[in-house]
Length: 186
Image (cartoon, rainbow, N blue to C red; front, side):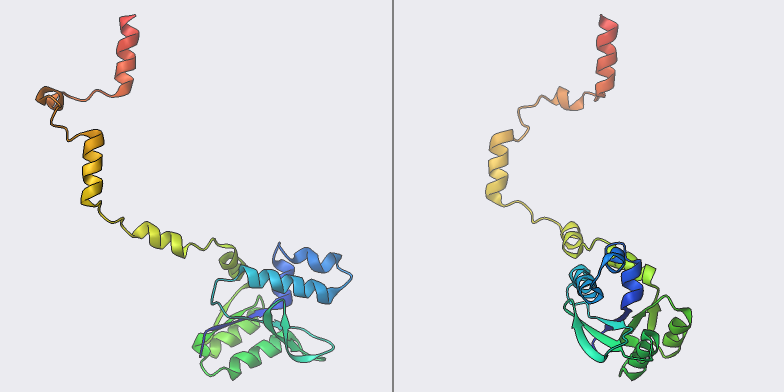
């Protein structure tokens, strides 16, 4: 089974600083939910599969919220119960992660063999700068210079043959000592 992360949507959106105000100030909760879902979809890493699990009073079933797959619990059922059902129905619990701040749900999820993390930990991961390309570039050594590049640099800077051997053997004096010497000379 492809790894999937089930996220308690309202729990996340009310705690994420980027979306928390959407629901307090909105006269259209559905529009606020879609806006929050779109922000989450935008913040995810490429290829990361996240599905929202939402409390829902009017409808039950699957939908799309801001571009993300969503599961509505429906009337008389909470998102926590639905999330646990989704974890239990998965064919490979080891490939499932549940994002919830409900300790009982997290414990039940782990008992079934899935991973459970808090909303706060998920937010930390979500907000962390992703640098896969930058770290790969930092680890890669640049290719050695070509023969033409070496010859061009030698032409510009020389090969050091014109430096007298006494200059090479002379001890190096740090710049701050030069300043001190100049002050003493005055």
